[in-house]
Length: 459
Image (tube, rainbow, N blue to C red; front, top):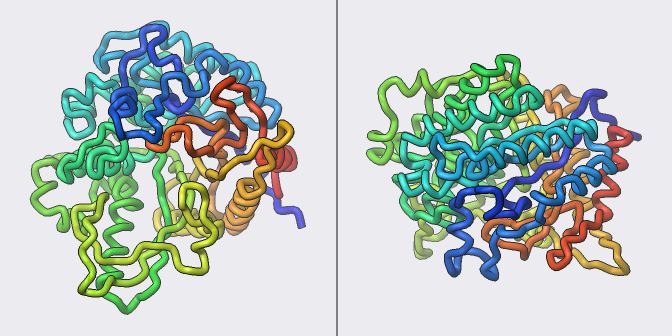
């Protein structure tokens, strides 16, 4: 039986500026933290950088033609803050504004709606030199940047995402250091987590001050914690803290102005000087939609034996003696990233979000995809595993939507193979293959399948 999505369901693809644009020193673009981080020896696989990436800066017209052929009605892309304000201050680079005007106009001409992410991790290095997201002054800087974008592009852009995955910004960037800027300090991560939440609220207000009818949301990377032993208090405690740290922090902030008290108690003195009196009023803000990036479920299985060493949680300032590996029956269903494949999790997650926070007007799946080892054979890429991943996750999502969960769109990650952050070019998530030597684009079998799904609005 064909499973259809609602008639107005928004099908799209997604990318991020540093991962695809290239042209890193063109037209006055400033240095970002990922320029610095990727050029630091040992930080990125093979020493790869985003200097060229997919050269989308010069080839966006070709990429729009690919999207047009796919039949998608929306394109989620991010703006590179250093292209517009090279030093993160008030000094504009008009050539950067001109580029995004060309991109937006070309999308609209192709009948593809632009959905803009203001921050997808490429912070101006000059702002990081002042403390970056761990410095409270970033909130005002981000709000000014957001307002400038709304003024420049808001006549054609209706849907805005303030930040992409602020958990990764905070904890991967400032706690375990695997992402830019590569800091390893729990206190900085907690500060960044708070300041990103404040920045979402400040940017939302800034956009609405220019375009009151704009739809403004935030994109979070979320997962389900599957608990194996509900009788083990250590497992239950860890699962709760993990859920609060990853899933609840930013949602509770914009809905209630508060963070989970259990998590604040765990952070203790590390958070007391960061959260100021009056911040509850600043955090709470109208948020029109929640963007969800989903790749795989998580597992909280069992406490480790006492004779095993503690594993200092790289993303939380408390030790974990809990096994978070995938169960044996799923260990063979891993992507090239080593992530377990749990299609049912997407439907479960959006159902949980809607039941837990029904006041959120609607949800958007802003990223969902998989990395596999692609093989080019006779000019074709028959990516069976990625195609299966796509089919099964959309089946799970469709069932949730049919049950009444208000999901309004789905954006496949990613349109193109690209610079995969600390993995460099070693991992491919694209439904379109990119030959990094020639930059030739070749749609994979997954792209052809996605085109079928979009054309029929169902599976």
